[in-house]
Length: 141
Image 1 (cartoon, rainbow, N blue to C red):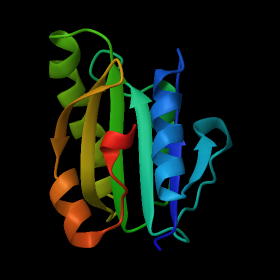
Image 2 (image 1 turned 45 degrees about the vertical axis):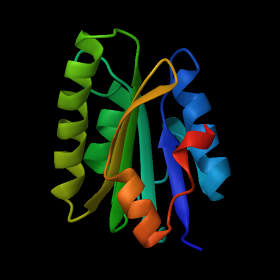
Image 3 (image 1 turned 90 degrees about the horizontal axis):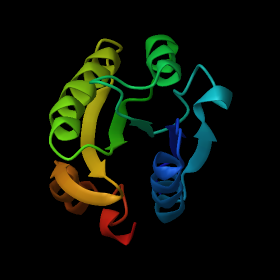
Image 4 (image 1 turned 90 degrees about the vertical axis):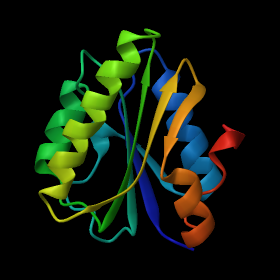
């Protein structure tokens, strides 16, 4: 089994609930961004979760991504509330987060966008999951 860690920041509890479900389903370590270690090379996969704030992650997640030494693979997920603009700015947020980690030679494994805990887009997740069998079924959330 792959060793993973889920690092998240949450304001209202939605992102925390998703992070808990992902960590539990995959038997990954769960840690709030405030307590996250700097060097994560001992893990096989990093899952980062945040809420979307005007096209960006929370300031704590932003600083974490700027300073972290990530494992080889990462998964990004975020939550948002606004139906139209939330989704549009969520794509911008995920792209910015991806670029930060790819600069550190980490590879995007999957990204997930959620609105009020309802999955609306899965990009790469289902295909890679069946092929690599690293993450459990996200529909269990």
